[in-house]
Image (cartoon, rainbow over all chains, first blue to last red; front, side, top):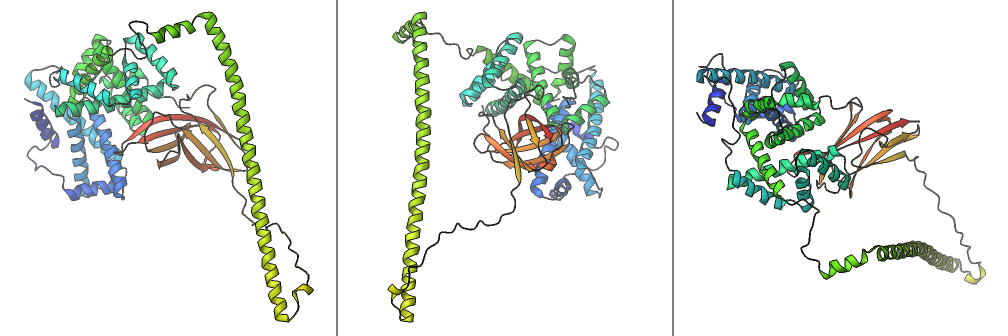
Amino acid sequence: MDAHQEADLLMDSAENPSSPTSRKWTLTPEAFDNLLKTFDPNRDNAAQKYLDCRANLVRFFEWRGCPFPEDHADETFNRVARKIADGEEIQKLAGYVMGVARLLVLEIIKSLSKQREALGEYQKTYDEVADVPDTEIRIDCLQKCLGQLSSDNRELIIQYYQGDKREKIENRRKLGERLGVAINTLRMRAQRLRERLQGCVEECVNAA
Amino acid sequence: MVEYPVSEEKIVRYLLGELSEDEQVEIEGRAFEDQRVLQEILTIEQELIDDYVSGDIPEEKRRAFQTHFLASAERRKKVAFAKALATVVNESPAPAVEVSPSPSWRTKLAAFFTRPMIAYSFAAASFLLFVVGSLLVVDRIRLGSELAQLRNVQESQIAQNRQLEKDLADERLRNQELMANRGTSPQETPTPEIRRESPQQPTTPSSPVVVALSLLPGISRSGSSVPQLSITKDVSLVRLQVGIDPQETYKRYRVELRTEKGQQVLTQGNLTPRGRSIPISLKADALTKGRYELTVKGITDSGTIEDVGFYYFDVVKK
């Protein structure tokens, strides 16, 4: 079973596990508009709140070890939009959305364990290189993306991650001193740079 | 001040799926309410990935990593990226270390000047030159400033004299016209006296008393380096000048001011920096005695909001 088939199966079983024959509800533009309105009457504010909430949902499903965080986040919004369309009045939307997401996590975990039982697996071990095989391409892309950074940022990222454990700590201390920033600020800056760099690498790998 | 409420060890256990449901819910609640906790989790997540890649992770954690952490494709991509990063970074030469293969004439010349006696003599001469030069520069700046002031005074006096002459000429003309209408010779009437009156100052409402504080990046929340803002009873407005690190390139910023207990005092978005700082004004009565945390966030062109830094200051009411 490939990843997409697995995702479809999960979403179908998570859609309404108690009645698998029930008709699948789809998100209409009108229902999505009503969902946005519940976030905020102002459309721009609503869009921003929706995006923030979605980013949190994706993180939540990822943290909980769910296989398809983006799809699960969208499924959560579908369920909330359906409740709104059914006339449910929601006072605190962010909290409500998280509640729905928690229920969905339980369903996903249940469904995953059923699948494992059926396949006779005790616990699935994931292999990080199984579906991310482009090691050489990734390295080439990373070098290209590093070349696009400013020299200061490139030096920062190299010095921040260079060396083994002890050497790394010392490098970071020196780097913080040289830039005149606290270690925590340096950590955050390195983290942001790394995220930006990873985004660039993924784009480059997909284009390759 | 409330410290990060979740320990690093607990966050690692959370990320590896080792906590109870209640504990997980608690961490998630905090992460989505407090940007610092979210940031901390994301940073620890990256560090955990790096430890896995470098093999610095105990066996039981490694197993949890492979069965729970790697469940999503996105995370597997993060691990692949971390491996590539480790390869590239460790193949890169260490920054700031340069070795030239053979000494050039420049190197030899530099070596000559670095011989102790020569170096001390040059250092002393350079220092003397620097001191004399600095004094001359300071003196020149002072003279330049005085000259500019004198020029300003002179120019304003010339302008004043011109105005007086013009007023006098106008008065004379008007007087001549009046005399002509009355049939009197202008010579019979005395020249009107022109009195210079200082212009009456317009009455303005009393200006608000403002107190200002500059906040610099990189100041830790603990220790004695936290700046203090003294607010007396007559102060009505507080101006904060928040310094931004030169490396930050955001065009717009968002700031959030919170009390020690996390109560939000102020939120301002779409702030444009002036030079390397962001000016913020708020009413003095919005601040009570205690420690405050100011969070600065950068707004990217795509509208994403990213943490830039945290600033701390103490308010003292007098």
